[in-house]
Amino acid sequence: MHITRTQFVADAIRRQILQGVIKGGAALRQDALAKEFNVSRIPVREALLTLEAEGLVEFEAHKGAYATELSAPKILELFELRVLLECHILAAAIPKLTTEQLDDAQELLIKLDHLLDTSSQIDHWSDHNFAFHRALYEAADKPETMALITHLNTQSDRYVRIHLLHAAGVQKAEAEHGELLALCRTGDITAACDLLRRHILFAADDIVGLLHQQQQQDC
Image 1 (cartoon, rainbow, N blue to C red):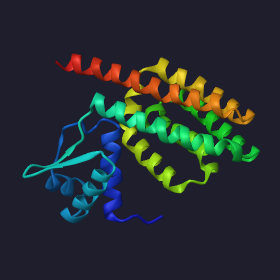
Image 2: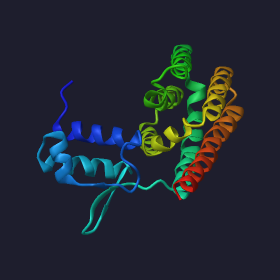
Image 3: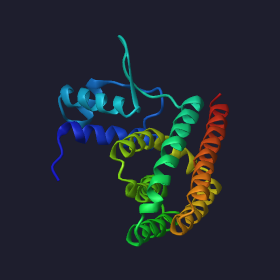
Image 4: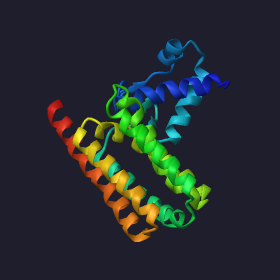
């Protein structure tokens, strides 16, 4: 598939931000990025505007672009919004989920289990994690809600990667994924939404704790 220069640059910068290569608060100099990616400043500018819309980049007047700072209040707000939207869409999806869709979600869980045992865990686990959740939500047929959830998950991704540093947290999430899928199979909307709420908020609390630890180490 052909991608534009803007898409190429946006994908590369996004990947560096999400992987922590570009730290929160780091300046993103357009001239330097244009040279790094061997493009003009125009696709770099357009790429940064794309990433601004995703919440990964901020523009400051007279100073330019910066990678968004990691923030405990922002983490909590993002994950609280995820709870509201994802529980809503899951409740709408469960009565419509087919056996084939549930089996597809099961296949994604198998891939997640495999990634936990490989070196590609950090690079790919969060992508497959969202793919599993999306597989459960799409039966609701709510494209606007799904677009908002996708946007929130893009903004949350860098925080989810912090969560990967805490293996116990990821293993707990894996166990909850299996339980969530089982509840979806039985059609228990109340229990499934309650579990999903706890699943998302536990991750938020764990990430905030890890962020505080990192900040103390950096002091």
